[in-house]
Length: 505
Image 1 (cartoon, rainbow, N blue to C red):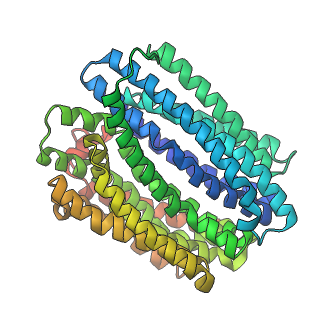
Image 2: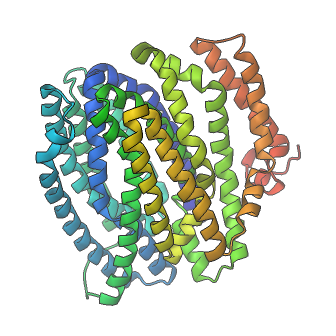
Image 3: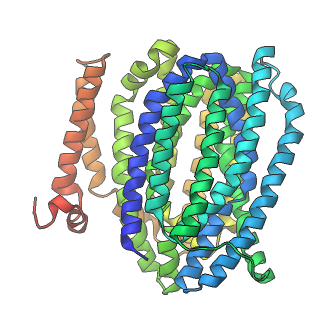
């Protein structure tokens, strides 16, 4: 296994974060301007509903990644090819199940979204049909991505994602002005889905010399992997509910305009999450190999701390920036379209991101659970926490609007991912979580606070223009980055930065 694949794969993941940030900041308002608030709200509402259907993928990508990585660690190429054929059959059956479920849900759209106008409902039906087809195809994209990731080829996969993002942006700017319709957006996504599947098949066959061929049906292996995918399926269901039930309930209770406003807060929340998952997303083959080699809890604890500090450097900087500059940013970014309600986006964003920060900086623990195939307790815990979210969101939204939806998501995250899972990590993986958090937060956190101070002072004098905002962002990065390099980084972390090798600060 090449270390460069993990290192540069993670770096490419951060390039993707910046590219997706550009996409969100520039392209999303462009889409809103082309479609209008109402149609954009329909697009986001139906997208949330279809995303729940997509959980039928049952985590097949993660399953393929885990087992292919295990076969590679044991140098069992033939078994890897045989297992991938079994996975492809499963992907085909699940894709058919998605189409059937979509056909079952389609007639109930009018009753579910009774607040939609006739025009909005007609558009919703068109979008729903095309999106169901797309998520069925996405099943195969996840399958092939999982196999490639099992070979630790993250440079290829992340480069492909980056190219596709650029193509998506170009296609939006070419076609949306001519066909200003949400159906245009879905058709572009459908087209790109087909392209990425074709490229992944070619790379798997020609680049990795991997043939998806079934030589024998292994019932024991299938049962073991199927239990793993079932647990991932339930977890995916929970994650999708936590991520999309808000939009569905808000759309059904408050209408499309409220969904549009809330979706921008969710968009920033998703960007925030990506800062952490970019590293943990490439670690499964590495963790699997370490477990095969007999890694002890102390070794795994060091791994969690190492990658957790890297995640906190980015997440902490992002959180500090949102706290001291976020209000001005949302007003500048969305103020012309949403007016004073743009401030609500900022507040909703804070409600969502703060409680998820602790589990994100230790999500290497989740990667260890996946590698050890110990997902049962996490599945039960998340299932209980999502019930809290659904209850608070459904009943609270009728009284307090989208504030209750955000609070429900935050509460379920804190109860499930922070309290319950940290206890489980300590008992099952023998990880000392308080010591881990202390090691992760040490030295970096004061740097974040020092970066925020001058920006908060400047907020009293400079406010309301892109120039003042960019000045404060530059000041924050200068102070945060400077203090981080001076005393925030450990000696080992400083040596990992090329231009600091051999230098003392």
